[in-house]
Image (tube, rainbow, N blue to C red; front, side, top):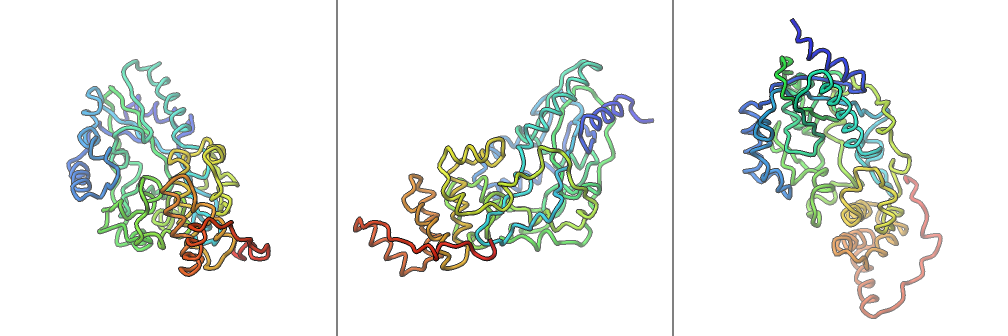
Length: 377
């Protein structure tokens, strides 16, 4: 017989606006903990030192919060209503990951989690804590234990109902509730996600080397992007959806209707030349309420310069955008601009530009007919 408290919570969660609800015991199996240890031991976490620093709490919900007995795992659908990779490869334009084209999902989901937690506490008073990717929680293994989906070969969660497109949040409860059956692995022999990765970031199925991942490189990595990955990044300026988008289980996904997750027009294939001109105030205005804002202007414009460098050779509009950033106050941006300018203008022109700057000569005039939009833009 189903636990009546659990089923009441599930019904209320769906009423509030969550699309998937599952219950798991507040503990992780040994495989999840071992996988985390291996990930860190191999250095796959790269710059993300916080992963190593919080490994003990991350691997055991009751170390994070000793009173935890049950984890309510909640998912919200954010599936796009068009091809998520449509912007990839558009010269002169930037590609932003689907999840970051609308408002920051952390804010939206946290509001719903708080509403649900208050509702639970009003009926079954007791301690509760809620999380939205802001604490050391291994949310994908917990989601699999709660029956919401399974971790595919790309290590992301896959759902039979929502494909690759679920935001997750958790409520830890001191209530001991009956767990849902865990979800099994339904990837079979498919390896589309592994083969789609532009930078070969998967050393094996279910293993990710974040140091090679475009999402990591454009979001988490604070330094200059290694040369070996720059061409493969293409025009991706924040995140990457390739491994998610090719999953066959997406055929069951339904387009999200949550207004906060609908793409903003100005973040759907924006012009790279416009983004390159952003100062800090302009960056903050454009990305107000967006998850992109958290990486800051300098890292973002670094990404834009890499995308510009992957544009069409000789494109004078993009060359002019890269030239503007050669004198940027941020060393990170300047370094990326040097690479972009050299790629688009050629070494001879780059050397001439360097000589001109050393001589203190004024910037040369650029004929207006050279600065035209590429046909693909």
